[in-house]
Image (cartoon, rainbow, N blue to C red; front, side, top):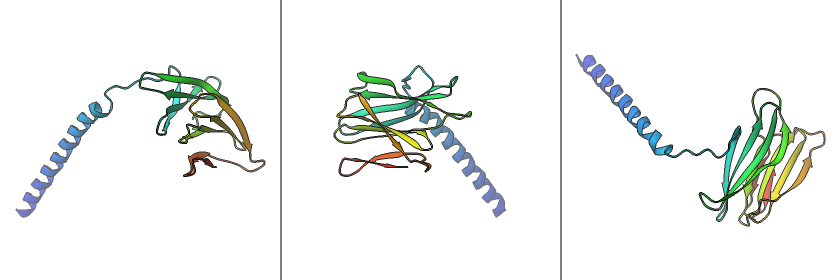
Length: 166
């Protein structure tokens, strides 16, 4: 008899847990996805948001699947409806295979300097810099010679400069 009571409690607890999860899932959809917004009209992947105390950016990869090419684009928001966009400021970068790789990283310092590092190939990284909140990018290339580089990541240091790891 005590075993039957235990099984009844176990079933009741399981049913309660399933109902609570169902309720949470039902409300979570309206809580987190009330107003989705499309930001591009092209095949875009790997969005990244970065900001400092005054500037906010969204960056993404624009994909040309037909030609196996990737471009990097950016948008600087002044408000929710006021923004400046710089489409395809970097690229094209070629890829092979079915999967599109995530090839860039970005960071912004307190001066509004934006740095974007893009993995061109296993031995070369392109670094794009836009100064003081502008959307004009200058490009520098870093080569490793015969060494293989992978997955660059850019960070802002406490001195307000940039450091890249690869």
